[in-house]
Image 1 (cartoon, rainbow, N blue to C red):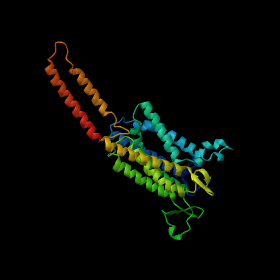
Image 2 (tube, one colour):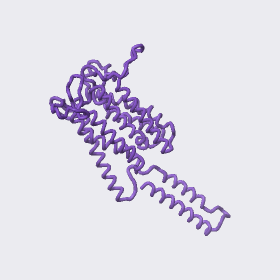
Image 3 (cartoon, helix red, strand yellow):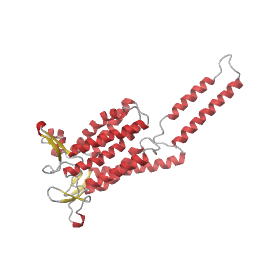
Image 4 (cartoon, one colour):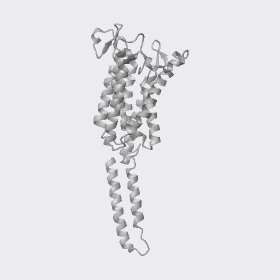
Length: 332
């Protein structure tokens, strides 16, 4: 499961339904993940239509991003619990027993998008922005799978005044723990609202949605990860303390992303136009038009006088300059 494996016996709330004739057990966790993926595709398709991209873009992206997301989510988890799998390595493949990590899923998904962008020769950051709102919405929904599995929770609650949901959650054992899965779910819903309703149509650069997702999610994860009882540890363990993998990674991502945003904003204010990345080449198309116009203005033998050509060339130059100015104004 995302962030950790199920502890002890399977939770009484984990199974949604069974089909005895097929020997099939359907768990709530799988349902929530499937719903999240479907909604991600729907949101991505809405953006594809708005941006007038190829209508099959999202479906093609999923063929790369989803499988690699699952693979890397598992590898990330196994890497930091390798000792548990050394005696029976085949269990690395048993993902239905739990053990997926969201940071691994994001890394794998981004790798899939990068491969897609290279194959299709489209801008990586533009495609990353397509899937980012759906990604964070999927996280918000998927955390409720943790609720049904009774996992990804925080410390034991001993203060009676804190024993209420959603601050805390009661497990099958009767113990009451802080509901850290809910804290993350709520925060991810807030990030989704910010990205989809406020930033999506106002961004100045390709990649802005991904950038602000990393900033906001890593900020939350720094704190909530410190409360988790099933963390992956880089150094130490839950009993002795130490360094939690996701907490350290979150701190690095937050600090680096915040620094990048600040430095870029200062740079853009100084030079007066967007950089890092620069706007995609609507301007290069204008340059080509200008080059063509300039070429067409060259006088042929027996053609018009230099005065007529000069006037016409100036007219084309003015037109190109105006188009450049318009394009630059739109990107500011």
